[in-house]
Length: 281
Length: 269
Image (cartoon, rainbow over all chains, first blue to last red; front, side, top):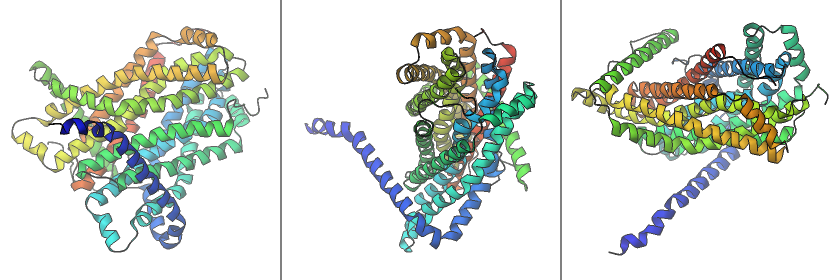
């Protein structure tokens, strides 16, 4: 009975091999999706528009109502209220609470708004993609498309990719607006700071360049979210439960990727010694 | 299951029906928890199994998110505090941001995103295959058997995970600030210990536990009310994740403000 012994190394290396295989599958998938985007914009533009509508408004059937705009707005507003209150508390310790406008102009623009809006997008739109594509995969609809000579990756995924990039710009700007409004309300209404002081520092430190880079971050995150979530949905297996598990795994991967890409983008754009615009120093 | 939604026509009516059902689901879970404890039939084995599962899927991603986050905090706060003439302030901000805010939130995102979707998928698949109904017919109450162990497991895992995230987050922030930005390690640790309080840690743990309860309840609720075949399970997972994220963010603000109102900030810089 030597067979089990000889199989042991194979069993031990199995996860590693499987991991690399999955990495390869997903990378090839991402490349195919991105390569097909220009074709799709010409050939399937009606579907792209339909997906833009789905992404922006979505099914307003649930408690989290109002579709993606509502979710992005709500999560950005709540997170930025927190930024205003905590920022005030933190700056108050060193006697700099009048400068809380700085928190909104810098921290919201550079970090919080893109990350929170992207997490909301991943939760709402991303898991939606995984659920839709996964359900199509396990009920053999994707194979049916291929049989009918419809190229499944461009038709299903590249259209969603184009739509996500189109939809994320207005969605993100709504989220950014919610962030600024919520921080301002929290500081001036709850903490009672004068709105003149708040607005002075807010406008002093808010630069158009920062807003542009912030939007760039949001678009990059949207591309990552679409690729990751569609990839997991497209390769789902294992019945209804498998689709749900794929949604969870996709969310895990996209949140971790967003966190890592965020720090890399921050370092690339603002360097290791970010400066405060307008304050001198 | 007693939680089939009434037929509604409008989105608003649907939202209120869902909110009411979630509340009554929560109440039933609390009652079931009391019953299982009093009658000593809590499914300990299930609790441990679920806790192990949740811990194994959430730990690594949480830490992978925490390290970049620690770097971002150190980067933004450390160097900007330097420009405002408050160089040693970095440690204090780490105490605020990572211990009190980031660690419970990261745990919540992971437990509701990764753990919650797996729980919801599992229960949703059993619901659409009518396994849950079969269990009810056999006299095994689904809430006692499924929901109570999962809620306990989620609370167990989030509270422990929050500690781990705090340690790793402070470590990452400290390492980046001293090694990359070249700040003084003593100044960082000095302001860290001066401004940290046990209360910060306690509230972080309370928040983490509350987020665990929210994530588990929402995931179980959406899973047990799934309908409409395989795509219904996918939709249930999607709704569970969105709902849990929003509730967690709102709960975070409410708990933080309650805490700030009760315990005043300590120390003067």
